[in-house]
Image (cartoon, rainbow over all chains, first blue to last red):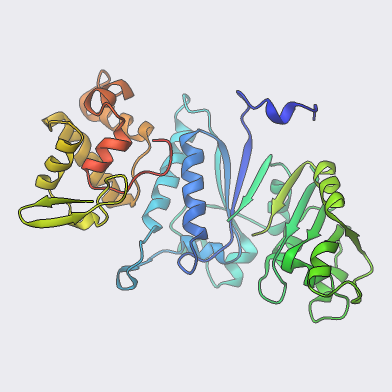
Length: 141
Length: 102
Length: 110
């Protein structure tokens, strides 16, 4: 990397990986991660959105938070899907998105693809590990 | 790409280190800081996490956080190198990217 | 600060967004718009209604790109651009249209 390149970001598009690894409502992290993902869409950044560990519970179907008085942000993942579809179909949008879950994480939690609100690629730890190594920026939240 | 994985949670409280070990690419590094330094101890129920590593990862622990927790003289896992803040900076410079396992 | 309407008081945050979005009404929207020096027309309502429906479904305000695309679809290409939105809401669709629609302030640069 040339010495001054970290300051030369104009016109440079980086590959981001957002690693969602926490259960949805116990802490604010999951919601914050989702906000980060939405902002990266606003800036048309390339992104891999990954759910591992308890993060897979964020996209479990059937959230109903009414009686807890908390905001149900499950519907917002619908926007994540739409952003990906838009990016895939619209040639004017220079953005590539991938949505990934780790096989080991869903299996360990008794879940399968059918239990999830998002259409995802299911990757093994090894495959995910390789994908991680290809990113410019990895953010866990 | 070589990633510097930074782990700051105790392995007794959270599974960040386990996930990091599972997903780290061979040849990349793991730096233990803050409560993450407890994973560097050589005689605990969690010592095997790092001792059993098969991926040839580089392990580092931040001396300052060991000192702060009264662990300077405690038995450490042999494969872990101690670094101070300058060493931390060197590690950051030597790797292509940083992944903080929050 | 709070809006007063028909003897009821509606709390707002420090930037003027109502804090309980379930208390929103068209009358309240008119009052908020007045504070923004906007007279609500059918065109304004089209945007505000779209924002509310979108929020109802996805629990988030749409990005400007999504908003303009939706307007392009319903009102035609000459209105489906951010210039049109800024004509209606001179201080920005996020700052003004979301406020009038009773939605929380969008976090992104919308």
